[in-house]
Image (cartoon, rainbow, N blue to C red; front, side):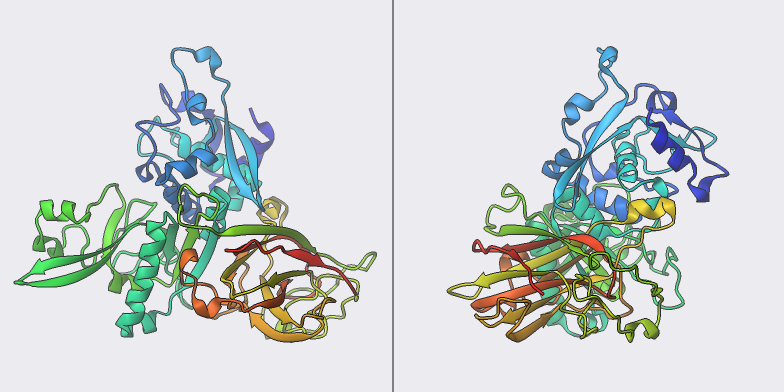
Length: 513
């Protein structure tokens, strides 16, 4: 029994009055199994933990065997064998991608239950199937405790489960609702990403004065992560003419409070076609919690989309010829420098603060802090011969594991791409061009704390799939420097910088004063 970890989740504050000592799977039900009739999105129900962001990511993972088999290695050997019970050790092995490496996590089969013996957290619709509950426990252990999973980031979860590149996209609902050409272009973006096996989730960001988990009149839930399981464009024969449909199939990990608008279950729109026509066009609902929504309605309500592309797998992306280069780095204080006594607070006051940073430090903050900005880690690459499409991804070491000790908030991060003169080999001397990735994201608002920031060569969060890079985002031949930064100076931490390009372009750390 993993007693050290058991003690941590028993202290989960919101459920102290109902949580019971953990039970082994054989104590919860007879004849437990890791899988029953395979694995699918129907195996997932969120439970009492506020981690729909993680459950939505697992739901996406379950749709692609080549992905979940990486996270649950040797799944056949890990299954219970009733014919050879002596082989059962009561432990299970999972793997998660953390900062560029697959990390092994082993847990026992004891799970938190309520007073009536029902699983409190993630569970399957089939009572004797436990893969989702055990995967959730392993992920909680990776992050320190179950409580660390309360309120997270789907962008990060998708990376942890796949090693892919996640891009958070903020939707301009007003522009998409008013301009059909923009709406159709965005639909094509999602359709192509889904066709190439990207995992896609979406959510509705609560506005000021609105509460997370509040339900809209149409049945959608604010602040709740939904998975996108299909994207379809089709023609519908109606009254002698052809009408085009742009549809998205979605899944709610809760399995309840579904969409009640047009094309919802039982709505009049479905009477326009027979069941045979629906099946022929692929307009089917496979699992509990799935529903279809017209794309125009989708753009009216949803504010954020996360697209996670599988850059590592040639099996999933045979037409992709992207090459990846990785560099590890650290935002670090100067040797023997005294710790900062400046308290990081919210509000405009912080944005105007100029820190006095030791010139030997490598934590100078974002470009707002002109006096210290260049005192950040710097990485150089060179584009030769012709323009090059690129994607750059910055990921910090996740701090969620520190939540059990009162910490755990990730830093606001971003990066700048600077073009330097051919003679500029020292610390960005000869600066000729600046390419910026906004800290506030395409949707604006206060600085956020993403664990990962992803941008195209043009510095904006990309709306296009990796194979269809926007020509405006191509880099012309020349020498460039990437500066990963935190929002405020003197913030320290480790990070991974990933650069994707069609050519093999070396990325190296720049040192100097």
